[in-house]
Image (cartoon, rainbow, N blue to C red):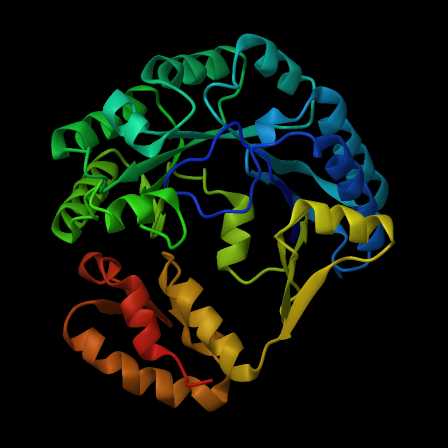
Length: 372
């Protein structure tokens, strides 16, 4: 089934590592929410499948929306689409926003899953990343969310930071295990161009990511999650049985989705398009009845490459019968060396990364790509 992604491009402050589209000025928030409603109207026919299995509010910081703003978006979606019973409705939230008042408000909305950007329980880590919350708020928001009936939680953690020792990384994981969090998304710190962190590294104010440390902490993560019965179902994602993220799993399985808001991406299995990453330009165009986007029609070779990239990242792997017959022999030939090296294993009709292969997921995928 299809899903809808809503991009909320506002944050209280800029994290040093973040290269997503956002603004720390809230002056256009009201106009932007109105533009989201209009874009939903303009693009109501984009999805062939009108039944939604997921709605995802990402950003930015969607927890900055008021109840009135959230309700307006939900009302518009319900007018234009059918929503599956028990659909997954996720809202990304920062710990400093999830106070008791905000949680009570969210309980009165259709949101049934919270994605909380903890990143670390260490003050040193949080300060290095320039997060808006502190360690105390990181703990309290989880405890309060659970008290208020949000048992469907996913938490983000970051490893590989210069301030994150192996002991601290283990402590972060252990704390979430103690909280009985059903889903974790864990990402290696990356130094993205044009971010504050990239500037700090370039000028010697911060150390670059230590690849050995990052690899070691990834191993620690995989071992601890497996020991606790979590399923490593995507490179960065771990879930208790039956608690996979529906929305993101649909991305990885190649399902269609509609992206609403500045910088949001959409996919209809044949093409990709992405909205302009500028709040003012987005609002102005939408007011004129125009969705400001760029579009790329995907060639058979590009569809093959995308499937290999996303499939290899998951526990389902790359299924040979889902590859265009014209490219199957190429895939088998290129995958042979990785099978022999124990980085890929064959499970029935699927080719799946081993633990050793997961350290090289992007590199292996690129080696299996067709030239476009």
